[in-house]
Length: 164
Image (tube, rainbow, N blue to C red; front, side, top):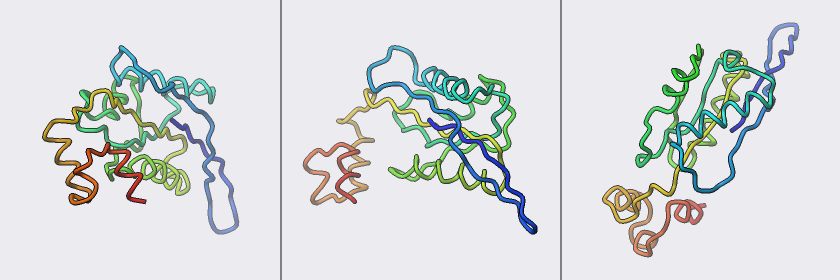
């Protein structure tokens, strides 16, 4: 997770805002016995602490839409209500394997335009919940090359890696 802030530069005709990473929070890959939503709250609070900010300093949350197998839906809504945030922008983005990059790009764009001053970009995923024999996984495999990639039982990251 990255926490962005901006510095303001005023010129004669225009005003620009330069995004800067001001805080980082993360948890190591591993197995955790608490819900993913609670892990997300912990990481968000860690990033805020790293930047010496409080939740009330945030005015934007940007994140990839959680995968279909995640029990908690609408993570951003959960985080907003759980932390009592009053945001100018909340965005969950679903563009497949590029969702995280798109969330980052959206946050940077909104800071540059002055739509938000302090934004958090975060992602949460619990791959241990993936059912690889179910109908959803079979559907996802057909999004990619059915003749050459799907039959060998690819994982989703493996399929994306081969698509480059």
